Image (tube, rainbow, N blue to C red):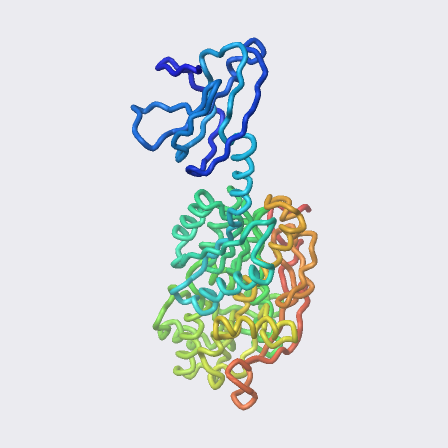
Length: 482
């Protein structure tokens, strides 16, 4: 018999979770004498029982027979103090039963994808639940499984706070083994999530604006997917300057995104021979823009550039119309989503030109995807909604091609792939993490041009990705070889 004593010298080797009362038995003939087995290598199976045993572990086997004990705890491999010369030991579910069952259990553990977005704040309509819908659509289209395991999508509201976003992401990484995150919240949260994901070596797809994600805050595991402040500002500001708007005044959201959008637009304006005569910043989710609009009016600038998004853009445009700014100064939102146009109404927004990474009515492929999205979400997808679908689909394809969830192997696949799906065309992932693809210059239709509530934009031109996004040579990302 294997003895148990208070002087037992423990050396833990591993822990395996066992299913209660469901294990088969398999007999193993060790056929080794004691001198052939060192004390450090000798093994004996113990099970931590549910009932109290004074803190002791109860052995469930000995050299001659097995005793089926309570299998509801942890199996541990330990070291014994003595051993008889030859033993035929019956091991309970070690090499056959539990190994096969354990492999099956691991195979059925879901591959988890996390979505962190603004579910209830000013960006909830352009991101929010629609980002979750887009992500789940990609999973369903892929068949709901990857590498033989089911795929599960979980989501959380960032509250537009970096500490909330990173706290939830850390919990997902540490406790739920989330493999990839789709972000569509705010730039401050995005930068914080980038740093956390780099530490955890987890891939993240970003749909917030700041170009810091592909410059000083870039990461080997972060991809800026749909758009950024440079590509949006480049399109909107370029069109306005070329139309004669040489002097600019900015009303900008007072956080990372707004500052980045203003800086990128200012650079374009100056490159094209224009000037920036001033700027003012407003708090996120502001309701009263009167003082900011008054400052813009007093500046006498030809163009008032709005470096904000979502509800802030809609409120500032509506109140600018009430102030009569549009009669003598041109109002140019640097970032607009379909939801903003619908929120403003065509009567107010008609004639506005801006850049977008996606429009649902671009071609047959985009229309087919968008109609499926509409059937679920009851509105056409924004570029963030569509971006979440595209990012998830491309990640799943890369995992399948790599044959592993290892982030380095998957990133290698993503960087070597040509991105072509119902959302993005002619895309590729650069070494700084920027996914470069075609961008569209659009104009808001007049009410009489629109056939229905979703028919709101006209595509004026396609801007090739290399012209739309910041040149790689100008990137300050440490990963870029120069």
